[in-house]
Length: 417
Image (cartoon, rainbow, N blue to C red; front, top):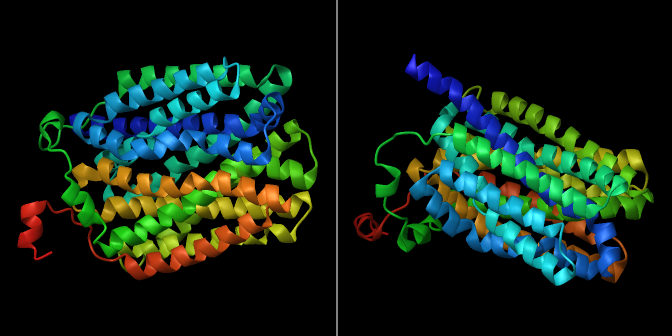
């Protein structure tokens, strides 16, 4: 009976992680849909908008690793509650600022709070999902990102139309505080092996040895590439639609939300179909890399966007590419949890991948801002992403295969490394 209760509880935990992703990306979408009004209020150029859009990533990528190291020691219950409370407080402050300098500080604080988000999700999946279902579970959870972007965009558009962008930020902040309370009351860390407080922190030697693993490098390249496109879309999609289709902010919010919702549904379908095909004759976890490669090939169709200038084809290309990108992200994250030998360190290892990938991803809004400023168009940004996704898919298939081992100093010598 106790075991059955735990198996039932894990679905509640998964749902709460899903909601955490929804809230996280809803808060990120709040800025992208508010950017036209915010840009006018603070007199921002396209280049300055790019820097503002990337500002939460400055602290986010720096704290990915430290925050997930803390996560591995104290558990997802405490870190999840504190993280969401902190970034929700940042949202509240964001709605009260009087100048752009103050607003940038609130975005940096938002990044501090969001730093362990995906480490919490990966830890919950590793602890509570069965190995055979991790890919599907992770893909479904990651669709919360798209639902958050959709909900945050369309709700933000209507709140801005009815009130202003400041009210949008305050309301989203209150929702985050409610989630934090529920998570603290509901979630429980699993009792496995050593107690959380007695676990040893990961050493620099272990982190260094991660990069000697071809499998880790292959997974990391995919993470970096998909993160770049993800942050580009998240930051610039509403402005791109306004630029190309000449529609108002409410119409932009509705169409952006439709893209995200279609992508979320498509990602689940794509992930399920590819898992059934790839694992039909061979259940080896490393075969998940073929799913990653196929999905990245689909996501590379984003390079077709400059060929279209009307609503239907633009929305179709965006939705399809995003759906493949989410499915690739879910498969790649599941691949990391499958290939890592020491599952108790999944939070920290996720932090390493996020630190590296977000250090690249933070340039996406900035580089795109310069491209738009210099050329007056987005074309080069889409071409760059398309080529990079194809290369990343090829490297994933070629490099991922052997288990990922993290060796300490003495173990490293014994292994002959």
